[in-house]
Image (cartoon, rainbow, N blue to C red; front, side, top):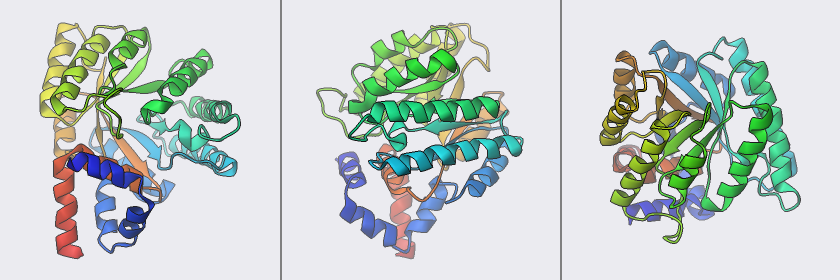
Length: 309
């Protein structure tokens, strides 16, 4: 019930306005978001890399219906990738990209516009000697995002994608995408979805995650295990061993600000750990989905409200 309430709040302009204005919000945001600007993301990236961690940088923003904004987002990603290269971080940092931020939802030719913008970003990533991963959004965009992935991989075979275990279709998508060189980030899913397309019970989502992970681990691609759940981390390690994978032939991914001690612990054991690092001013939808994912995040938020509100 709490998760559904929070996911509903992610789409509420009224609640958004109240939260953004609240005096305690900035402190909460600072735990999960690197800052408002590119320089903030670079500083945070350097700190994470110093602890043996990798980074996937996300410029926050999504679902634009303005062509000029989609172009501005594309330009911002190109500039971000140049900054990553100039900072000497290309070996450690990639970028995560939402197609809806590039114009996928535009009324006229949105999917083609987003694909063209994504090609521009992928070319900049290639020039910077790093990679791009396409974020997955709500289920209505899954087919379009996977179609864009296949189109981009013609010229940029290293482009990664995200699959969400709570969708009933995802095990089949894993089979389709577990081939040579395919980089797939498997997460549980963070959008409010109907029961017709998504598992609603947490246990069912976990079981789906395990089934999907087994497909990826036994495939010939590169699994990216995006979870903070200690049970799933342990299961992933066991599956990697059963599949004959060495460390470095898969990676774990966790969110900035969530279980940082565990991130460093795994890295100290020789595991590859990549931190999803968002930055920018459009943090509200991202933050509410993060709160919905983990009760501990909600507790942190409530502590901030009671102590600073």
